[in-house]
Length: 276
Image (cartoon, rainbow, N blue to C red; front, side, top):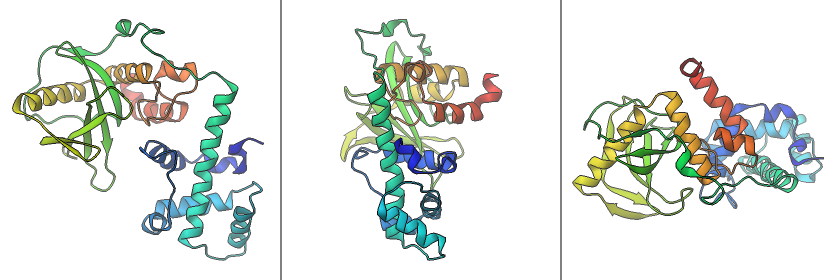
């Protein structure tokens, strides 16, 4: 019995469960992160997913079997109990990743194994217009060439406000070394801050740095879906991580595509018209 088989396939068929898992696994504390009762109490989505997980549990862990039986008898489960259930789902996912890694060699690309200079990256050598309204790209991390330099930008939408935050790589590790420098509003206005922020550190940005960042961000936002995909694939090849959710890629085919199968479906659904 594999880890994922502890729950009925109906649970894994829900796009929302993969969204929740992806967000949890992309956190800096992903290895130890746990959902708690307050999170469940404050989110109907998490509460409903946890309850559905209880209903679809088919494993042998005594506590989850108890929750399953209580739910079947019509008893209401507490936020703390539902948090345990959702953490059980997350732990199943973690174990499944280890199972995959144990069965096959993890695909990694480094500068010695892959001639990164041969990747056809989207590139531009002229800055964009300051203050222009931009089209927000798909959430993800992208590598491209701007003003003859490699740039790595990360875009992440904040659910509550709908604003998309922008970060740039500010260190050697292209999976965690990012500084948040501004945001794109729901109306497409690009707002750059006077300072960037990375792990609690404030990094002042001078006028030249802000103009350079703005031009790079506007160039990225001006790409069509095909060039966005190239920039995402380039990031995945360099980092070994999915450019959309940030999870480690464990198969060569996914590495070549730049993303795993779940994120690939999400990308295709959003960009099918543009890429057809």
